[in-house]
Amino acid sequence: MKETPLFRGRIFSVAREEHALPDGRRSDYEIVRHPGGAAVLPLLSDDRIVLLHQFRPAIGESLWEIPAGRLDEGEAPEACAIRELEEEAGYRAECLEKIAEIYPAVGYCDELIHLFVARNLTQVPYAREHDEYIETVSLPLSEAIAMVQRGEIRDAKTQLALLMVEKQNPGA
Amino acid sequence: MKETPLFRGRIFSVAREEHALPDGRRSDYEIVRHPGGAAVLPLLSDDRIVLLHQFRPAIGESLWEIPAGRLDEGEAPEACAIRELEEEAGYRAECLEKIAEIYPAVGYCDELIHLFVARNLTQVPYAREHDEYIETVSLPLSEAIAMVQRGEIRDAKTQLALLMVEKQNPGA
Image (cartoon, rainbow over the protein chains, first blue to last red):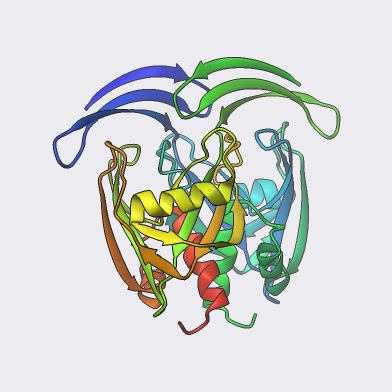
């Protein structure tokens, strides 16, 4: 495999790769290289969950999301999820349960998101980054599932976390 | 909003954008610009579904996925899904049902994937692109859901399509 760097940014880089396909043919691909991330659904004791309403410059609007962030260099996914849960949502979790690994954009990007659910939460002060603009709400899991079904939650990791946790807690 | 082009590729481009946040502060973002895509879960008459096992250079391995592709310029999402269903899976659908819109990577990419389910399918010859290396299998929807839960299906659009269609067809 031959790799040519094309762009280096703060969050991701872009490279051109020449790949041998399984049948021996060769082809060129432009690939976004991303360090990976972690995301966590905060599940409160009364089957309520916590969502963030967050302005996303890439999309140009505010979206409903679970807390998530990019892995720092050498950071374990669970540590990243615990950090983002505290920074973005203001909740501390003693331990997390891994519910999925997701590749969000397999056609052109190597990002892998580690998806967790957090229970037994305690509230702590926020510690948001300067360019994050976030509102936090709590709502019943069933209402969040209805928002997915009505198309009001469109962030992939959030849709998935909600549907996977609902499968663990049917009727919640 | 001020936008500076940083990279132009075949499938996506990268730009630096200066955004005014909702509170008036300004911040810089590097953003992957993507034309958007469509993906479709082929649901056969006996509650079996069709999955592709496809080598993905960005990931470096073969993944289980539903048929999907990038929108051609001016192409309607439904037309794209019908085209990819035929090219990649070898099935023709008369009509599709939209089940979701998903933003796979809201932190840095504007891609929107239009997600469909296709029923009443008829088999047609494949018409794959030269650099696609794909195996096609059909399996029960329930078995595909179990693969999601065991972490064997890790492509976000595929995980989501399966969970959303299972919610429409409980016990299938």
